[in-house]
Length: 247
Image 1 (cartoon, rainbow, N blue to C red):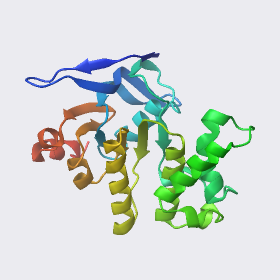
Image 2: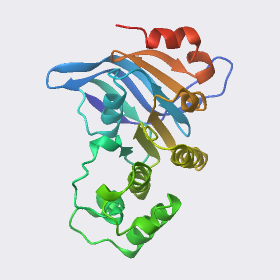
Image 3: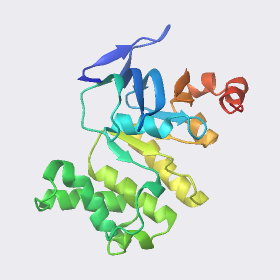
């Protein structure tokens, strides 16, 4: 697979150039010989909210993992616009409850990319961690074990960890699934604010309401891209019925 860093724009019909944060072409990836992504080509617009929509097994998590660099693509090309490495928030179930970490230690891990695993945090690092925890409303949970937290608290801690990375590209896998309405609303507002502040956000979601409020959608089925564009254009009743029709 080829990874490139550049500035790339497209011009929609009758519109202004739209800068892309990521473009992927003919992307293929899978697990232990089981293909998941199949000749996937598309893009993520910069400074926007993009929703990945599709049934379970469609390739949403795999695509996020490839974009984050935690899953190796077997073929294809990735082009990133200039910026910081992406920050990735996996599904809550992907982070073990038995990890002997406090909430603060979990957020501090977000500074490892800059500091390294063994170098002590600087005053600036601690300020960044404090700011991220306060923004997510988890500063009062700093000394609590991660496994002791509720689903909403834990998800906010993991998002605070991603904010501590100070990335301009945030990738989230089902960030509000299984949370109560108050927790979902808090995270939704935060993500909207981050986009307004200059962060590109990509989230996999089953929540069609959240997808309809995004700036762009990528529709996946069986590891293939079957729709891409503004939600009002791609989240049509016909497209959605095809997306979730039995295989």
